[in-house]
Image (cartoon, rainbow over all chains, first blue to last red):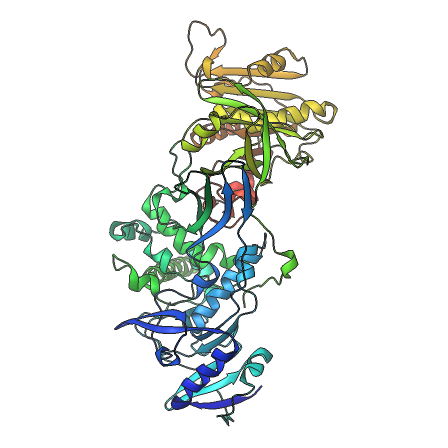
Length: 349
Length: 283
C-alpha cells in the first residue's frame, strides 16, 4: 500500500475529487468550537482540523429517530419501511469514532443481525484523520491511538504542512485513482500524540477492577451530583439503546411505528406496566452505564465499549467525569490490593 | 481487536415485523384479567416452549411483552392472559373475538422441559405469575408419564383474583396433581387457606433430590420463596424462576431488560437459579 504527501493547498481538490465519486460527509463548523458531520456541498466548508464533533457518525447508521413500520388503522394493513445503504464517503473521521462504529457493528450483528443498522452500514468508505488530544480525550487509555487505522480505507496523518495520506485498504487505493497531485511518501507514518487525560489501568486490569467495584461507594457519591438527564447517553458514540413508540396521524387512519434513542440514565428506562422500576436508584443507573462501557459487553467482545472520546464528560450538565470515576475505582482497587498484600506479608512474618 | 461477526446481507434479519393474529375467543376471569385465544392469520403454528413470551402489538398503541399461557400444541392456536394495567392493556381489553393483533416471537428461554424430564415438579405461582406457569403445567399434563409428581402451589390476593377458575377445579380433582392454593386475604365465601404463598411450602413432603421448583410471581415474592425453599433444604440447583423486565424489542438490542450482562429477553425470562445468583441486580 502506498503513502502520499497531501499539502494543505491540495486538500480542497482532494475533497472535490471524492465528491465526484460518492456523497461525502465531513466535519463542518457549527459555532466557534462546535463541529458536526454534514453532507459536503462545498469543499471550502469542510474543516478537517477539529477537536471533536458534537455527535459521532453513529447518527448515519442509527438515526436518533427512524420509522420501522407504517400502518393503516382501517384495515390493519402494514408495511415495513425500506432501509437503504448510506453509500457515502466519511471524511475526516477520528479513530475513536471509527472504533465506535466497529463496536456498534458488533452489537447489531451478534445474536440477531439487525437489518436496519447493518443495511445502512453497507458500501461506505471511511477516511480517517489524526487528531491532537485536548484535555478530555483519553482514547489512548482504551487502546485507540490518534493514528489507529483499523476500520479506515484511507488515513490522513496530520503533519506540519498538511497530511500524509496512507492507503489502508484496496478500496482506499481505488479511491485515489484519477487524483494525481501527489508525491509519494516513503518512511514511517506518524504514530504518537500526547494525551493529557488517562485511565490509570489497561483493559486487562480494568476488567479485574470492575469485578471488585460493584459495591464501591463512588456510585452513591456521583449520584449526589448527577441529575439523571441522559445527556451522556445521547453524546456517547457507542450507546444504542432504543425505545419504540407508535404515532397516529391526525387523520386517525394511519400511523407509524418509530424507534428513537433511549437512555439508561432515565428512571423510566426499566419501568414496567404496573409501575415497578427495576433500577430505581440513580446510583444503580450510573453504575449500569459505566459497567456497560467497561465490563458487561467488554468481557465477551474483548475491548472496552468506551472509546475515550470525552463527550460524556464535556457535555455532562453536572460536570461529572467518567475518567475520574474509573480512576477512583482503580485507586480504590489498588489500595485494597496493598492492604491484602500487607496482610499476607504480616501473616508470613 | 473486537470480535466481529461477518454477516452477508441475505442473512440480515427483519426483527421488528409483526405477524397478524386473530382473537378467536375471549373470557373475563376477574375485574382486571382477561383470557384470549388467538390464531396466526398466516396459518402457521407459534411453536413456543412453556415460559416464553410474545411481543403483542396494536397499531397506534405500541408493543408489549406478554407471556404465553397455553401449552405448546400442534393445532395452531395459542392463549394469552392479560391484566389491564395501563393504556396498552386497556386497549386490548376492549378487543373482541374477530379483532386482530400483531404478534412477534415467541422469544426468550422458557422452562427446559428436557431438563425437567423424570423429575417431581413443584410449581410456585404468585398472582399473575400462574399465567406462564399454566403453559408448563398443561405441558406436563399432556406428557404426564414423562414426569414425576406435579405439585402446584398458587397464591392470589383474594378469592376474586384467582385465574383460570375452571382449570383450578380440574387440577384440584385430578388425582395426578397435588394442588394447593391460598389467598392473602380471606372472606366469607372463601373456605380454603389464608396466607401468603410461602405458607403452602413448609407442609409439603418433598423428595428433595428429585424435585425441581419452577417459580413465577411478582418481584417481591422471590426473596421470600427462595428463603422458604432453602430452609426446606432444596438445593439452588433445583430451582428455576422467571423474571419480569421491560422486554421492549425481544431480540437483545434495545437494552431495556438488561440486568448486569444479561438480556432477560435472550437469556431469560426463565433462569436457572445458580446462574441468576451471579447477576447482582436480578432479585
